[in-house]
Length: 321
Image (cartoon, rainbow, N blue to C red; front, side):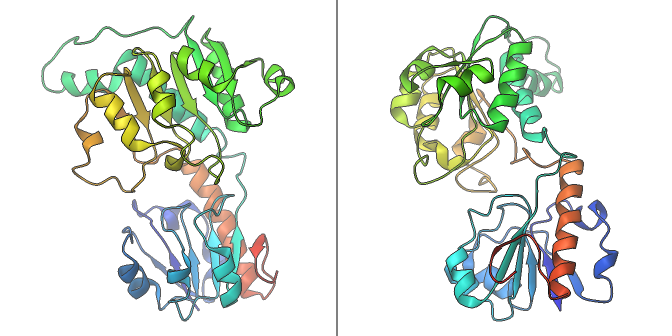
């Protein structure tokens, strides 16, 4: 059996968990580069029986799945598997398993969200860059106390983000397509309609799951309703947001700035217009990317792959388990 661990950009996969349960049972290869082109992905992955993803970095559409003659098992790190065509896997007899989100890594996205918000408010990343070229105090920052935080999506992550906003002394409001007053009150926040959230919040942060009903849910009308002094933060999914509409608003000063961890194309192209803007904080999809979270993902992945090799796959989301 041949196993490939995909998208290990930092070469950290094998040191993040104990892979000895697979020793002598399978040959493990690490693929550290992105595979954005279908032809390259097919040529690179064709020899492998088992593939282990790192979250959604490499998508698995039908065209790729059907072109991998040896593929028998796909282990998806993380809970979600939106970028895998499960119907194609079933048609090909490929078993798909996922991994839980462990408590050991919980809080990673919430913490990054607040790191980005604080960087926007206090111009931390901009001042850091200028300090390194000899500069000293270029911007007047803003305090968060007394500001209004608008949360789009009040699930587990949104609720965690709300709790920290309250600790900073912010007024917290929330909206999502199915949010109720009861759920909002339980989180200590006020439910408002979509228009009110975007037009009144000083910080808007997105925490919805991506689905057909939420794709593009934040577009030009929502961004256009925001205050010129407001910031927009997306550490959720790029597909929630109209990236072109956001870029236009940032380029023309219609909003104060944005903080992004997710992009319509990843890795973000070298000369993308977002990289040229001074009013954005950009991070390279780091939300889940901590040592604790990777250790949990790969530990569960080793369990999954060992169980498949034993003929009794676990945590199966598609196939015979």
